[in-house]
Length: 113
Image (cartoon, rainbow, N blue to C red; front, side, top):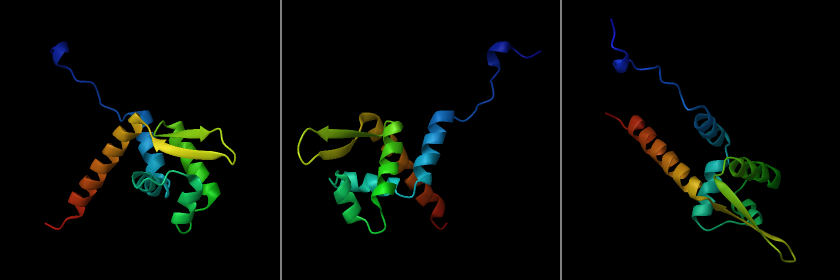
């Protein structure tokens, strides 16, 4: 007879966070956007001008996905002409740290030896 206190239940992947990582990595522009933000480029027009092949439509879709997950936040300034800037949230900082760790793990896996 197995002691009930020593039983371990089957572990499953965290559904929401796994979907979030998959969606962000699946978006070919998300990592580029994070890199731009890290360099202080936080306005959409400037992002499009800095990255060859990035369209406004695709950028807006990428930014929207990241805002839905709570990784990025949008600041709209009450000015004319309108000014919009994006930034990484506190949660986003944690998430980006995890992505950095995944990249390090990939580099270890790719290293010869």
